[in-house]
Image (tube, rainbow, N blue to C red; front, top):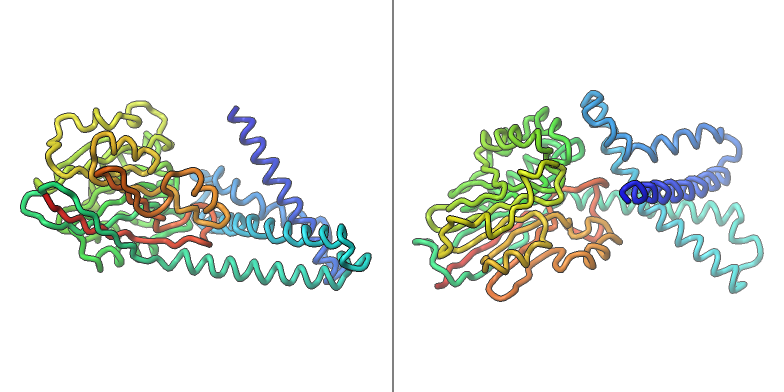
Length: 386
């Protein structure tokens, strides 16, 4: 079944790329007929089209300098793949409708002038979309929520909790992104900092090489910094190293564990069931088992990377769950798909006394752009009103 799925993905990806390549070749021939060797065009095209997969396959096998070059190229090619496919498909749909209805003279739809005009329009729109998306992905905002909890939290009447998710630190989101995130968080002067998974982007090496843990150590909070695993975080054999690096940065990783924060708050960190760790001893513990031995009279806050397990939190009467994972779709039209796939793809949802806050994330995965979504740092004012 897995083989069939990946085979279909590759056939679809290859077919759409072939379509984009053919339309691009037609446009180039309209501009400068026979000046570009066909073999050179297609060789260059397929090399670019293969970079998203090649960069994933060779990770850890080639110098990091090469990965730092190939990964952004592959990401931007995926951006081109999505929007060039959509725009060219729209152009061909209009051509077909014009021909079907007889609204345009015969031959006009594929004339040299039409090819030049439509090609220039598509390229201008692509440059605009990708330029905007790059800027948007690098311009996060602060999303603010205020949530009341009908419990006593020691002497505290209110806590300021800052949540960051989906930084995807790696070759595309490097140390500069960590520095920007830390600066944003510290400006909010939080009591508690929670990192809700997908800290790295599958590969631990750039996190280590760029000493990103040193930058994370600059996070400032009154009651501590905590993190959980996401589906793009480390494999089982790297988990101990990753936890140790974060511990040195004064960030406590919670993997199906709970802690009491300042004798005022019960904080649970769940492991992600979709992660790359393959050993059964690190994932999948039921929430009721995790909570054994915990003081359930305290306000209960759960960190779970994937928001789809919110009903588990509701069942144990958690006061708040914070999640990420969805990126709110990251790119239109995928925003529509995530909207259908998740009960809450972004923002706040309440069920009874339980609340869910889903972040759109700070970073990007794959294409290093955002269109139709906004990266964010989340600030939650948690008010205790017993």
